[in-house]
Length: 391
Image (cartoon, rainbow, N blue to C red; front, side, top):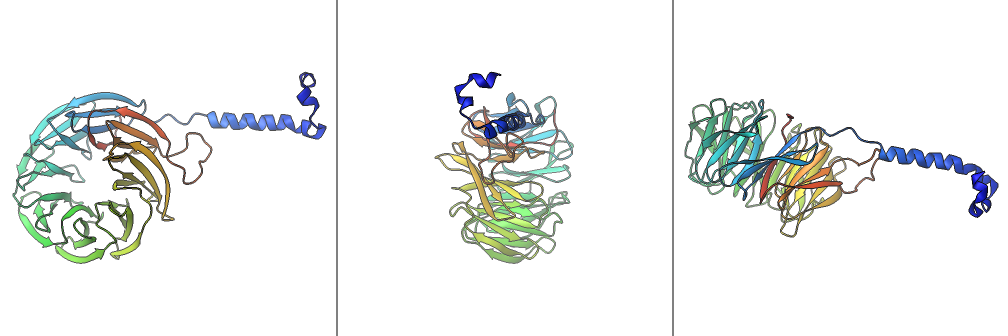
């Protein structure tokens, strides 16, 4: 027999020798399990606004390849998918909104918005879109005809924009006037305004449209507004100034990011109470976040000139998970609709991370997300979106 040819084999005790075939079979079974292929990824497309390249890069997330770089007007800074369609909107700060269509992956229309265009918002039904410009206007667009229907001038420095869930009202945050302005989306009539805290910016409105939360970025507060009456319900005190708001998919909790203290604040949106305001480690300078559908995890993008990272947060246990370094000055984060990958803009690339282990064996809780690859997408990528439709 072959084992008797080896002096090492002869030195093993008979009882142990009998166990070796079983151990070998177990080892082979483990190796097969670890090399077993996962289901092929779906060919979702990631659209990346490359600000300095004046393009929208299209990346296939099944092959991890750059499919196309679509030329758009100078300074693309924001991309968003129009609900109920295969259209993507790219807003350029030079003053234009580009309508990109699938599967052609080309610009089908260019809509003038005005210099200093920012704060793209699209109604939930996909019927209207809106953006602001440097002249203090809210430019309202009919998505069907691809034409501007109105551009009421509100003045001030408009730092945020959101539609109510029914798409009937658009709300603008004026960071200089410390106010919110309510505009009828069909008539462009100003319905009213309400004073809030210092330098209001990012906003979040709960799914039933009854309450709106605004980050008062100039002080450690979140203002809560009753949408129907346009009245302040409360000012929630935080540990430090908020820079971003993330609403859980069910609308039950609001997650506020504070850049200076790296604090994650959890707000009960029903009772307007701060549930958690403690230093849950989000890493340095958190800039954006995205939750998964069941609201059990949050992925936070941390920025900074020295490089950024993606930090996982276990929302059920209020505990940080592992962080993965992704490179220089990341600005935007998106999750694939099947929640398989997290994609972030970093450096001149799109970094793609897996939300699960790379083999069927469960990973150790708290380990960093595996970095799959980085794909060059152009200079200064600043926005990313991954629509639910596929080619």
